[in-house]
Image (cartoon, rainbow, N blue to C red; front, side, top):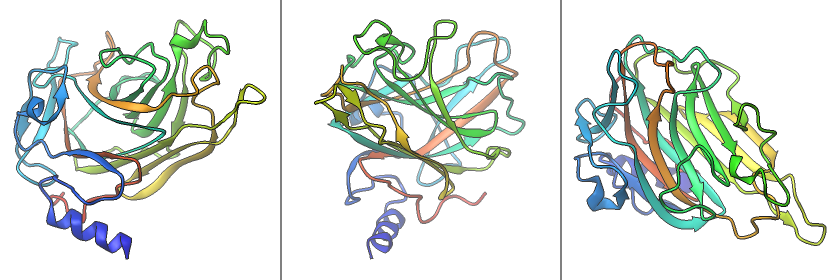
Length: 274
């Protein structure tokens, strides 16, 4: 019954104003460029394109030949009510002939940060940053906590290598291989803590879906240590980015029908014809 209700709500709100969904924190349909009026910050330029997955528009990011910096739209952030579990759903379209970085990292795309960092903190060196992005055609969910290197309990996401650390949770198959709209979903839950023994429990959750199909699942993840007993997710950052020298050629991507909540949101009942 709940699944049917969710589909009806989605179908009736194709423009992205999804209300009534269990645990929904916010949604964005990118119908126009007035994102700051809807709670977004740290970004000033937004290019809204047609041919959206649903509704009137979608946000466009472009890379121009010979220029590393993304064009058209700014990276942008959104705060939400702190929570120990977080879910995201968005539609992603890559331009025809999309090229990858040729490395097992980049491009970056969307992120979650926590209450342990400020609302302006960068994603690259934090107490915890989550990543939801396509890398080499696979869906990647990842985490890093570089800023914890000197904390009493140290790093939770593996040792520093070249100044960076991180754990990757990738889909087994290459999924992004055309220029159609695809539904990307992810769910993360912070692990619990064993305060009596001053250690984390291996019960954090990482799940990912592609077009409604579960393609990533781990239920034994550690995302935080006892250094951060009050850590919660509270910030979403959308910042498409290729590192220096990693852009293969000029290309674009589009994002539409983004929603963030505390429970899995699920695909829209209907999207644009592929």
